[in-house]
Image (cartoon, rainbow, N blue to C red; front, side):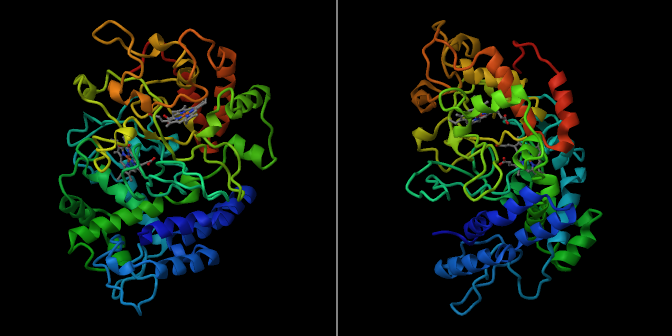
Length: 484
Ligand code: HEC
Ligand code: HEC
């Protein structure tokens, strides 16, 4: 059954009209904020959503307790209860109803608060830096965290921008583009493997992860919130007794973090050069235009097959991802601590970090397609952070199959092991469509000049506030051999 939460996402994505207007006309940040304030309360985001949401919720059985994300105990819905009962942000009798502005302000304080980590030194912003489009500020393949602040994480930290229409994970995704017959396969969900259903659910993971903020329990996090400088604001927003129940305080923090991560000026500003081009305010230069053509051409880069580059049918600006799960055979990063054990493999969708699809061999090696917006700000690419320059990441696409020894290690038999981060039984899962699929020694899909053009185009996807960080990132030129 579809949960209230899923309906919320559907309601949000159906409101492309508002998002499209924001993108096309760029109203002032205040207007932007007040528009997104609506997004917090799914039914209020627009009247269409209101109707859709109410219809949807009445159609499904909210009594089965599908939504447990509300703060405090979930009110039990009776057949006569209003349709919004049980929804994530629904009012709870006897509790104050926090405004979007209150939630966002509290979420922002938590996001930047190092006292929320076991080490006392690390906040969300340590790995998701606002000056770097909410991605990492350094070139490490994986960030360090944990109780000692030195434990390496299992994967590269992503940018938190442009996740506003990310849906919950589904094995069978159907695009809202007028043709519902095409099953796009596994899609969506937070994290590289889609294992977290929502940003509020997601927020609990880093707070408790032994490689991230390292708190041992929900109670430990709640105790810290109670001592924080914004505890008063939390009481005001969620009720005087919010700290009496650690689970309620933890949930409240998750919702606040989620709402903060939905604020448009911080998380989906649409201020890149390419956005200006889409608005007819700027033009791509010659190299960038050539790059875009190659990016889109099905027989060249074919990048846009997964990293969508055009306005959606309902007019929203492209996010440069379809959030689909795909195996592209990224080389094993032998420098990662977890990979010191040759038997360990991060197989994405089928585990081991994600556990619910462990019996689905066809999902082994699949990771969620990331947005390429602000990709030029990054200094470590792919889920294991194996590459440290954008050129090298694009070259990998061009030459993965034409020059395997360049990318992959050798097995005990001395032979090059293609797709060496996947046990051989899963290697058929790897995508071999363009730009991949040539024989070793054949002509690569892209020449060096074409790779440069694609990179020039990718640099037009940097938001205005991250241009300086992108400049610094491109000035760091690792040697081709330094992959760690
Ligand atoms: C030590 C570094 C580190 C810290 C601190 C950290 N994160 Fe992350 N974050 C990561 C990594 C690594 C991933 C990807 C993990 C995965 O895919 O398994 C991630 C993923 C995410 C995602 C999912 C993004 C997506 O594309 O689906 C969100 C949202 C997020 N973090 C928010 C937060 C919040 C909120 C905090 C603070 C409560 C936080 N992070 C603290 C490293 C960190
Ligand atoms: C079949 C789908 C697909 C196609 C086609 C595709 N990509 Fe990707 N892209 C992905 C997936 C999936 C990942 C993440 C894979 C991983 O980390 O294991 C990714 C990751 C990336 C990254 C790393 C981003 C980051 O944040 O670390 C870059 C850069 C990139 N792609 C550029 C391109 C370019 C350029 C092209 C065309 C030459 C292209 N992609 C074609 C699916 C695709």
